[in-house]
Length: 194
Image 1: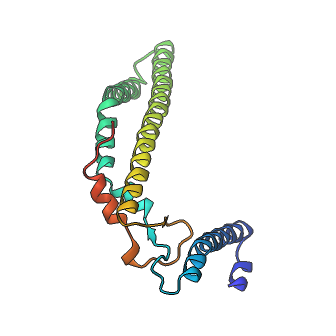
Image 2: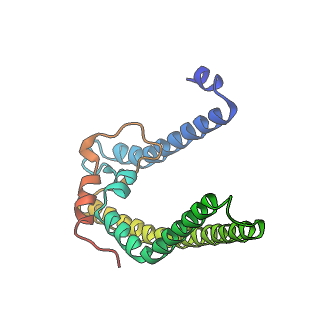
């Protein structure tokens, strides 16, 4: 393993080492909780119960994601229509410019080119403004979803009497017996985001 790491590029080597250190830290923390529980009780009746949840899968498959996308599409539809109209205006002006190169005076060509440049600048500003606002709203909606997911993970964990729930950061193997992702998805399907 060490030989494999040392043959990597420095940036890749650093990422691999950080990943392995994170993994070892996660396993160590889990063992800190599990070890004493097993040592205290030889029949393992009070052993620590560990669950696993795949956060990436939850964020990809939660039914609220589709609702978030629909809400954002509706909210930013007028801005999108404005951008489409600007693009059409630019295309029309560009076609007019190309078709009338031989018939327009230099001053008329310069004015037409100036109009095209102004429209392109306006388009660029509109796109940046819309993208910034869209990203802000999307991040707000995703933050609400993440809060909902954490609450549903806590609910499933309490129902299953789990002591620790790990996610996919730093986990190499997960027995499907302890994977509560499907249970959390079931609860998410019954929830809405305000």
